[in-house]
Amino acid sequence: MSDLYDVAVRTADGGDATLADYRGKVLLIVNVASRCGFTPQYAGLEALHRRFGPAGFAVLGFPCNQFGGQEPGDAAEIASFCSLTYAVSFPVFAKVEVNGAGAAPLFRALKRAAPGVLGSEGVKWNFTKFLVGRDACVTRFAPTTKPEELAGAIEAALAAR
Image 1: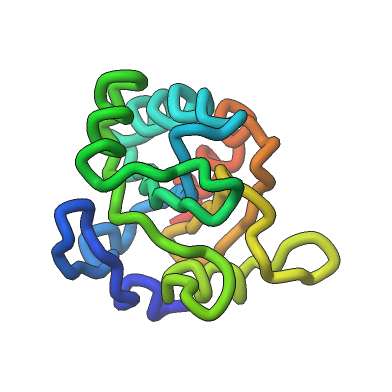
Image 2: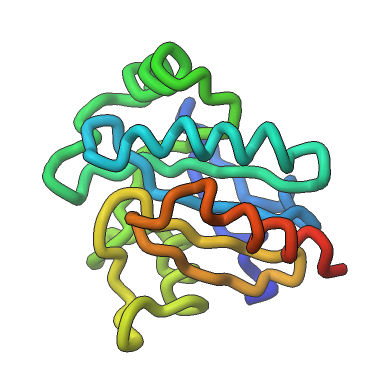
């Protein structure tokens, strides 16, 4: 999965980008939503971002409206919600699809690298988390995994050189 950093992504303001700026960092890539039962996980994600950021870690949020229409807002509404409700400082990109024919290339690559239960590739719900090590090794965590439960895995990934 060495080409992960070359995969095209869209910024919240509609610009084209890649993850090249994050090469060499440990990343937690999450499909997020503002009207989901797991939405309070934004607070835990932000805590991880602040705690481990200085050591070379970043949370990257990708809003998704594929699960129960739980992210209906546009980019401005999403940014406002994240800022005002959870003081999010980590990057939140443009809204994406994570499953199906319209799935964003990043999520297609992540799902191939880290299949789900019984080898399934589909993302099951909002707040599925993909931990990407400095070596681009990917580990998937379920939506029910609370961000604070990932601290040990993040520390281990940061310690690996």
